[in-house]
Amino acid sequence: MFKKTKFPNGLRLVTVPLKSTKAVTVLVLAGAGSKYEDRENNGISHFLEHMFFKGTKKRPNTLAIAETLDRVGGEYNAFTGKEYTGYYAKVGAKHLDLALDWVSDIFLNSKLNSEEIEREKGVIIEEINMYLDTPIKYISDLWEDLLYGNQPAGWSIAGDKKVVAKMKRNQFLDYLQSHYVAKNTVVVVAGNISRIQNPKSKIQSYFANIKTGKLKSKKKVIEKQDKPRILVHYKKTDQTHFYLGVRAYNIFDERKYALGVLNIILGGNMSSRLWISVREREGLAYYIRSLVQPYTDSGYLATRAGVDNKRIEKAIRIILDEYKKITREKISAQELKKAKDYIKGSTILDLESSDAVASFIGGQEILTNKILTTEQKFAKIDSVTVEDIQKIAQDIFKPKKLNLALIGPFRDKKKFEKLLNI
Image (tube, rainbow, N blue to C red):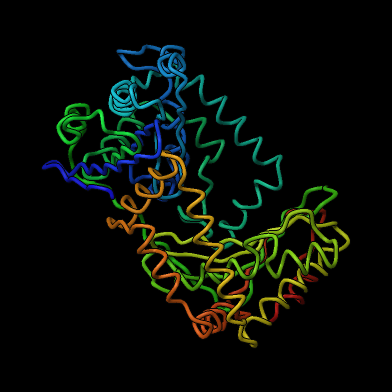
């Protein structure tokens, strides 16, 4: 069972004792990602993540930062998303103090040296180039660009190359001051924490110097769609990579649980409808998978796949047929149970490690300010009915909500427009 503490300055701490492990993870989350940016600093959330590994006063360079945890066999990294950014260290339980010191040091004391910023621009621009050259990765950016367009929700997390090239140190300092503050930060310590006598006091001391102040809120996502939409990105490839899906529900909508079950039935595993119909029966794709993304103010369900350029239309038709079928025919009780059991079983397996538990707990807290246990989540999954699945399908799978983004050797989207009908 987790314990949540909120300090007077607004900093939140969640401790999660796990008796089944000898490891412990310290995860610090800031409620700031690319949705909190504007055109002048698009990419700064991700850029800042890189800069936290460039040196502090205590650990003056990248080598000193890396060696600290390498010496004890620790795992460490960071990640940037649309709505939050995270930094973590996973170590053997006896090295918990070291992990706390390391994470708090890079989070609070990074130097943000101007020379390092200029040098890192080249690294990030090459990272952007890598995504642009990798259709299986770049298609996800195009998908959200199609859905949200020219607003933060539709921009790439990595940023625009021209914008990144112009960034200055003062922009990073301003961003830290308005987003990396106590009331926008969650510290999660998960694992074997039996060695900590007073977790609350210890963590408070490590993060005593965290900034306080007002938060800069993100712009509300604007969504408007009254007909199918298509984005075709020309690239000479042997395979077309695409997303085909619909707008759905945000993270606060209780219908997300039924949507999650629906997603598994459609394309969430190797016995799902789309896997069988597209890959096994027709041999159209090596990978095909459906996914659900609930943000705080928007959401979607999509199917992603890579197929032979000459067979793209057939693949799209089959996927749309499966969308249509699930709106018209109720699923069986057996199929519903299988999907529910899959979600519960895979969740249990996912949460075998302390870092996964930290992410599970911390992600909920930073986005919703509320944490559900696995048992509580499973209860909501179990409450989903056959009728719920059909009702959700009928709500989202409508022609006017359809979207298709693809990368391939195509310049004309007219032939795809003819397909988007359910």
